[in-house]
Length: 213
Length: 318
Figure 1 (tube, each protein chain N blue to C red):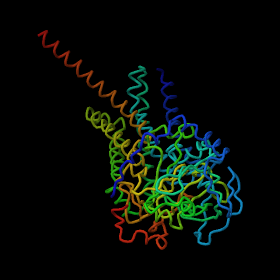
Figure 2: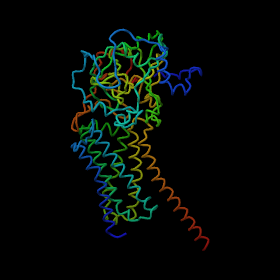
Figure 3: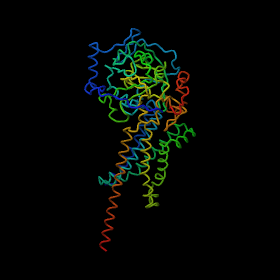
Figure 4: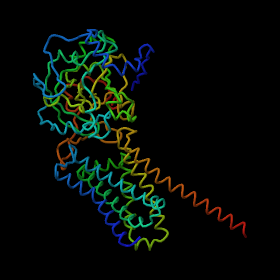
């Protein structure tokens, strides 16, 4: 793929990732009849949270889509997708602490300690921090193989995020978190399958090498 | 907490599906032929059109002295899972529900059981406007100017027997009119219940209108309960069945998550939901920078209803 196409892909991704934020700002300022509705704090909190989860799942979809389509240059936007997911997750936390809880420390501590869905959500965001910090080329080079290991943290983070979403819905079989869970299961399932395939191939190669000796 | 058993249903009592799905047509024919019981009195005579303004609505003197939420807030932010679990889903989908003709089946421990048309149900009741606080179990609240009449006035007409200790209510269940029931989010049909003392309490209200207009479908047309000292889900919408029972009846949210939603579900800032605090609430329509406000015991109606629960452990009986 020519370099111009990569640049275009990056610009398109940046626009797509910024669009939800722009849309939300228009809703906050009620531009053109848009609004956040009767419960604006909750709507804002849920919108940025769900955008973060969406982007996290899109990030996790990069590798499977790349393998299925052979379009390897997709990997050039993976870091950007992950960083946008992190940015929306931070916004989610900021909205929760300020607008929702009005920085009332006792209730925030109570929430994080006593309400498991909030504990898990917080944990997910905290675990995203080292991934964001080590996302630069320099850090990637410096950490070498350990970088790959570290960034596998994204799998438990995604599980935490989906459980966090599921746990706060009132009905256990609410369709929306079910859909998110199914998508995540598919994305993680693909990795499990590849892992076992790689292992089998490696074992067979080892066996063949043994036989040829 | 006491658990109620499934009622025993004799095969002869089960309505064949073909009859059930054609009940509206059958009812129309039965009313035309004069077969259905008529309990219409001769008093005030409420006329409730299918939509539009309601006439002859008096003002209840004890209404809340607080500004009501906007029509927009009350009619676009709803929990009515039969039309979807999103807050905006009911406003989008509830137009699929037909509220005319409508009938209510009355059964159980009462003298005058049977199926009544909506017109028969409403006819004798004078309409009044009552402004009540409405507190959702999800920790948000609003102020609503309902139009309707006390539930006690309706229930007394069915002459409940001395064995009627509870009243159970059912919401319409019809997959053709309610896209949300395709998902097993709850065990359909939606059902709720009150003790007979709670049901007969003068604050317990049947709403048929809102802001002087006929109740929009997403708010539970054509008739719904309003029990202002309990969490919103107790105020069951679009009622098609009322059953007087001797034992505590099943209620939908209690069936779905018994440790989170009790039979009583009185608004109580001191007893948290297992997953969130009930100490404060967010008032709808107050804007992005508003703070949460403290939740009041029995949603501010303690003076009128606390005696109903004298001697009852409200932590155990949540």
